[in-house]
Image: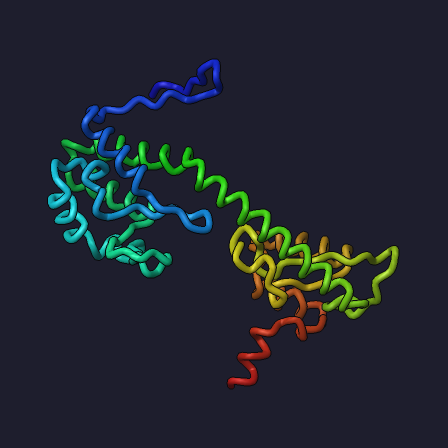
Length: 243
């Protein structure tokens, strides 16, 4: 496989087996693509280029044939706040569909994979999508910082050990479910505990020594092991009350 090479303008040249006509259909798809809150939505009525068919009708037949595979990635216009009758598919759904087509049609597998690469290229280079994503990321970070600051003012002692905070035991904000796994919870108060820096380090070291992952359940086990408070665990409290 040929290695990637950068041009003098720091660009990667994308080579494809697709025809000029097929690429032209992709350009129509780019014009019709919708973005909202940093997420791209591809109109299912413009998939004839990506699915390598001669007509929109043929592309629709493929979508219907593989509907069970891509069902969870299909989105109505109403769901994304658009006043049209169009239906949309998330890029990952289209890529999964193309991978299935490549498996089911070995003779055209290279073309379907070329289509996958072009979809990824379009999404990665979409200016409006990048702009919306950067705005959303800044808003999320700002919200997270506000919540953490408020919780630090609220808690004068460690939520696990009860030890008062001071210059030797400074406040650390720990995300119960990691941001890398549950980014949507990064600014949720119920997902943040304020603990001492020493305890924070101790917990992460303990999880690593077990070969486990940071999660709500591992933090519960850590607290039980050291007889720390579980008052922070609102989900556990809910379960207990419902029992």
